[in-house]
Length: 185
Image 1 (cartoon, helix red, strand yellow):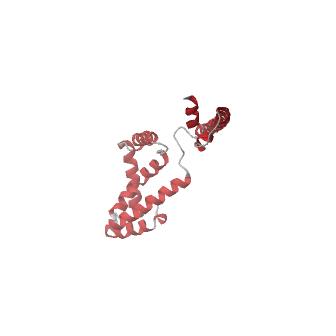
Image 2 (tube, one colour):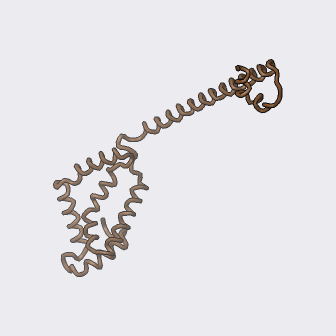
Image 3 (cartoon, one colour):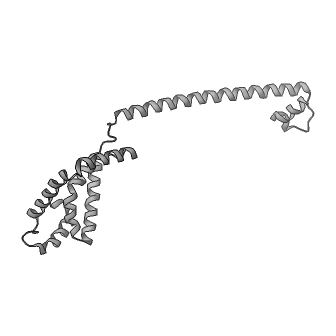
């Protein structure tokens, strides 16, 4: 019964299933097959060890990179801030072309946008929530909003004709939205 089992398990013997093979040859083939399996197993263990070392090295490198990041997450790069400013200006332009009054609103919230852009981290969902709540506490209270809105309205009254000739304001708003670099923020 044991030799019949070996006959089914050993590939070299199973390939020649019709051929007569002696018990000694069958044991020889079984020993060779066991030796081959042992070598394959040793090779797999070596590969697994190499992969474990690579994983450990990569984890150490990741840890070193993360240790260099600031506690508030990935800092806002100048490039990201500039990109967000361009996106904000493009949004203001599109909305102002639809309704010129949006430009006035954008002047009032511009400072809030800048502080949000500088303070809120998007490195993770938890960081986004934490830094957004912190930003809300620091910049969106009435105590902080009043001077910002007052400064924005003062700027609007000195840079546009809102006080002297309000009928020109739609044209000025559209012109300013189309060329945001030419007017003060």
